[in-house]
Length: 250
Ligand code: 13P
Image 1 (tube, protein in one colour):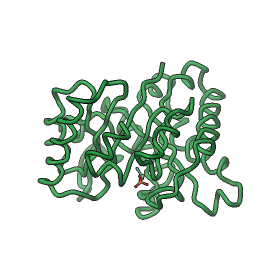
Image 2: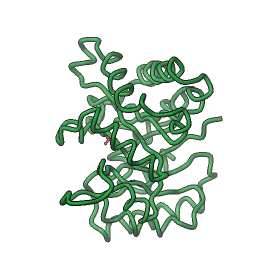
Image 3: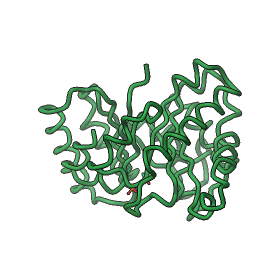
């Protein structure tokens, strides 16, 4: 049985103090109100990861993650952060292939495949993002685009490695726009991705993989989206920056 994962991607928001204040609020509110039916992942900027990891360390349902990592282990790569460093800071998850990284930092599927390897090699869970642009959806190319992103980024992995992979379907046209995919649109894509995995791996792996939806998830649309049988959680951007809206989604 898949357990839902609600992850908050802070993107490039929050100073150190603001970030820690947000985490304090989330921890406080989850203690009182949260039944623990979903896993929660807080994904701040790199320089907050260690502090956030320490803050959530005593809480069985909340873990920390990072938004990106290098495909290299170590060395002369100024400005980069390795998966091993992230692990050593106490985080458990790394987002790979967010559309903002694909779009603004030219990350290709083959680079993302090697970043995924780095994440898994270090015993972390990879949240691998995929999603089509508006143009691609309007041209009815979204399934082809998704197949390419998922297969080129992930299908070199062994069945065993797949146990530490989460997929996040984030249509680019729904990110930060206030226009979410309808539950039916998202469910259709999630079923498609699950079937791709079934074709190449096994029915068991495809049944067990967590596929999150991301793109303008808010308190007022989360329930409908998360009630779909193949939507196993959310990757939340804007609405995770305030404790009350993030908690309502959780
Ligand atoms: P928004 O929730 O702000 O649309 O962002 C979604 C996202 O990109 C999460 O990774």
